[in-house]
Image (cartoon, rainbow, N blue to C red; front, side, top):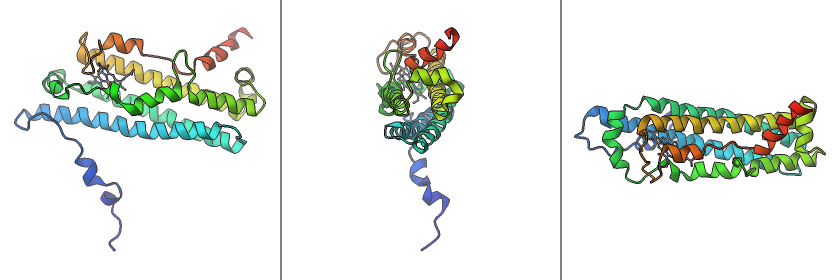
Length: 231
Ligand code: HEM
């Protein structure tokens, strides 16, 4: 048997065959390349969303009681990685600001009704992270872990570093939540640059719709941390 190669291990042939611009090959090369750029950034986002979702699932599972200190450290490790991944996702949005508008306008009709709003991987994040009014499963797992170790989330926020790994978990959650928030803001700015006041391919009003959806995960944690100013 021949030794495993880089290309085989990473299934390179399949991977590089998945970028299939719909712009007719007879169109200008610049338009075809712009659509390839659009597809690659979206596909990269979906790959990172796969990693993010798995890491957040693993973090939540590690925190569900019974959880010993080793489980808490494991949850933290997953959460810290997820925090970095969400920043990579934001960078994917920023790079797309270099999509020339005239080429985007040329290939956009071929998107039909396809829209990022249909991303099932992204939607799953809402369940994990919650929004302004809803805590999300990750926060619920963290609160249960704190309780299992004899502390409320308020105690963890009040005690700070004295809470040890529970404090580091709380900070990692807020960092993760802010990373998600930054992603939403970056996406909003990108959409404003690319479609102005126009609607989305998914049928929404565009920027106005997205601005209403810029939510802050972990509202309870933010509220309790904010109490530091009144103690
Ligand atoms: C030129 C680039 C982009 C434009 C013009 C754009 C435009 C839009 C618009 C207008 C919406 C609202 C729904 C609609 O009516 O279609 C939307 C939603 C969304 N887009 Fe994008 N988008 C772009 C890039 C991306 C990228 C790279 C991703 C990464 C996966 C993405 C993911 C999403 C998600 C997840 C939503 C739903 C957001 C939410 O529910 O709050 N978009 N996009």
